[in-house]
Each structure stands twice: as structure tokens, then as C-alpha cells.
Image (tube, rainbow over all chains, first blue to last red; front, side, top):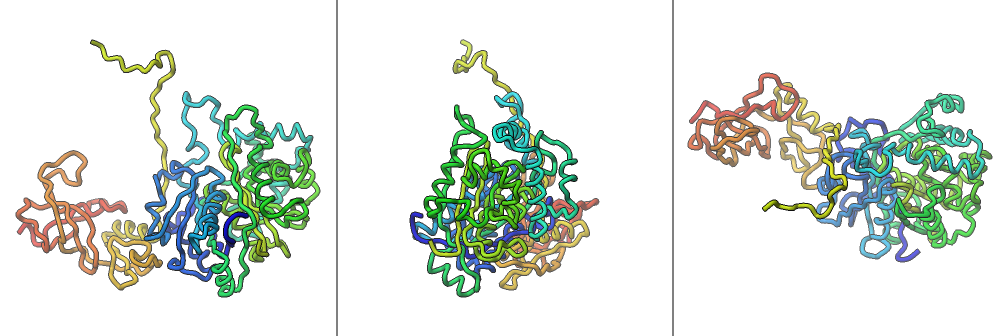
Length: 390
Length: 156
């Protein structure tokens, strides 16, 4: 990985819920920020720069909220930078924050991703009304359903794979106190019987809309070692970072297995010295808003040959007890504050290699992948974190 | 001569786009408490890290960014610290008669808030003048529950 060493030394999350009407927007962010600073044994005064990301302004009806939030985030007199990359923004934001340290310019950077989905209907916020769209406006699930159906056709995956993913992630969420959905009574049958929203995606195979925020503290090598010495918690060292994008309407684009995702994974593995991700990666937090994206991304990210990702799901490999646990936190399927969701993946990956994931900790996790995607499956962000220095 | 404003797009669709999109926002424990208290005809400030009472209240200290949580009830009378006179009233302004826009420091508060003063004329208003709240008839939990301020003791 290019540049100076950088590590995650603080992770702070809010309780995620459908409506966090107990807090204001600044209050929501500060809940995550102070937890991250506490985790890092730092105060706002220790922070050199702040990097924030959220989904588009129209989701919450507030233009340039980063300016309004500067004081609440302790950014007065410091560089404050905003990142925009649709649903992958949480991941991209963490990567931009990492470059602030890799460059050698800053030693301690606070980065925050958030969303209050309760404020509006995010499903429709980005859709111009007819007649300004060339394609039918069908919501995110309606857009992705035909590509999922095409994945099933290509791979001959059995119909129950999606249900298995949803059941796993919702049961994992019961081990994560911050997760939005806690459904202790969920079963394979209850998912199977839930409303078919966009075939093959059922209601219980779909992410919720959540309010919430996550904050990370990233530190240079010296600052990370000092923080670890103070807090007693090891850093999560960043071994690789990568972003890729492709145009939504590019001709010849394969939306089932997009090139941008494959290239993003190849880049981040090369930086991290990973040649066999299935064997060398201990735990994965990937962006799965609809159940079938687990097998699709297992293939896209190189954990399984094309057409065989679903076999890992079916065989229990991606369960917490399997050899490649995926989304131990409950994932996007259990918690989806859009602008935060990518950074939650990155932060959960860091928690795993720091041994701080609580009841959803994978014992002995040393290498973890965080992954986010957004837009029309066109924006990708990934990082690899490890318990050892790169 | 007719004005031709077409750039050559005749025959291509051009249609109005009216964006109307509803939002629900949350106020949080400080602003929420402030506006809720107005409904009960009380005014709350908050004690800052330096001990000063900030009114209207803020969620975090303006100087240090530290969390604040000590709500302090302040008076319903106060002192004008600066003002300007609105002699020509237009639609949508807070009063439909000539009035003052004033910074008012309520008794017990260390900061001033912007509100409107109903006064007979600019000669009756001064920095240092005492004012008191005139409440709206049916408070709803908004800053407009303070219908306006009026000069304490009537017009001077």
C-alpha cells in the first residue's frame, strides 16, 4: 500500500433504529463521534482533520450539511472534507480519511458516515419523475431484481439461497447490540412466507431503512501505537485500500458481475499481499442490501469461482461458524443508514481484527475485508485490515 | 420582430419539473426542550462550559464543543441589546404594523436572541430598553409562541 502506515484506533457507532427521534442530526453524529474518541482514548482536541460522507443531500433536505455540522464535529479551525459516492460513500469516505494520514499530512483523522432515512423516502429521492427518465422508475429493489434473476439463471443457484443469507444475517444481528433489526423469532419459513417485493426478493430479504451514524479514528503509525498503549486495544492496520467506478449506462457492462468490483478487489488484494482470498481472509463485511448479493459478491470479490458463490452460502461457509464468515454484524440486511452503511462494513472489519466485536467476534480474526458498493452497482470501495502491521 | 429563444430543440420534449418532497426532522433533547417549554409559556436556556447561560439553548458548547445538558429557565422579560426599525411592512413579516427587529437578552441569560418588538415608533425603542414577552393565544411549541415583545411599562 502506498504512503505511510495508517490504522484504525477508534470505532464508535450509534444504536441504529428506524427513527432516532430522541436526537437531533448533530446529536446523532456526536453519539458516534464520542464513542470513537473514547475508544481511541482521544478528545476532539487531538483530531487534526475531519472527513465526512453521507448519501445525497436530497435524502435529508439539507444542502452541504458538513458546513452546518462543523462545530458539532469539533472541526472548527481544522480541515473538513465531504465525500460523495452514493451507497458506497461510507467506504469511500473512510478511504479518503486514510489518505489524509497516508500522505503524512495528518496524524489523527476523524471520519464519520451517517444517514437519517426516517427524514424522507430515500427509495425515491434520486428519481426524476416521468418523463425525465429513460428507464422505468422502480426503486432500488426493482432495479436490481432482474440482475439477480440473471445471476440465478447463470449459476443455477437454488431458490433457497437468498432465504439462507437473510436468515444468517438477521440471526447474526441478534449478537450485535447496535443492529437495527432484532428479530429473535425469524425462521427460514417466516422469510419464505414474507411478501414477494420484487421477485426473487422477498420483504425479509431486503434491507431496512435506518437512522444512524458511525465514526472512526484513523491514526499514523506513531499515533496509533500511542493510542493502543493508552487504550490497551490493538489497532487495525490498513493493508490495502481501493476504489473503482464504472458508468451506469456503459455498453457491454455486466451488472451481474461488474468489472469495477473485480478490479477493486484485485487491487486491494495485491496491496495486501493476498493471493488466495478464500484462505487468507478470516472475515468479511460486504455490502449486501438484498440477500442474493452475498453469493454475487462472493464471486465478484474472488472468494469463489464464477457461478459457485452460492455454494459457499449453502454449505454454511459464510456462517459465523464457517471458515469465511460474512457479515457477522448482521450486515446491511439488518441495518441500513445508507450514508453510513459502507463505513459500518469497514468499521466492523476493524473491530474483528482488534478483537472488539463482542458477541459477533470471530475468534482469532487477523485479516478482514470491508466492502461497499453504490449507485447502479457501479461504485466500489474496499479495504483490507489486519492485526499485524503491513 | 419576434424573439426566437429556441436553440434548435423544437420537437424535443421540454416539460416542467416541480420538485415537492416531504421531510420529517427531529429536534433533539435541547432544541426540543426549548420549543416544548414555549408551549408552556416558559423560556429555557442552557449553561455553557464557562458558566454563561446561552439562550436560545445549543446542544454543545460554542467554545469547546463539549456536550451541554444543564437546562436553565430564564425570565420572560429582558433588555434590548441592538435593534433596527422596520417602517415599511411587507407581507410575511412577523407583524403587519411597523415594528423593531431586536436582539433581546432575557433576564438570566448571557446571550441575546432575535425577535420582534411591537412599539409605536422608533423613538420609543432604545438599546437598554426593557421588554417583555407577549405570548400567542394558542402556543404550539415553536418560536412564534412568542408573538412578539412589548415595551415593559408600555411605550416610553
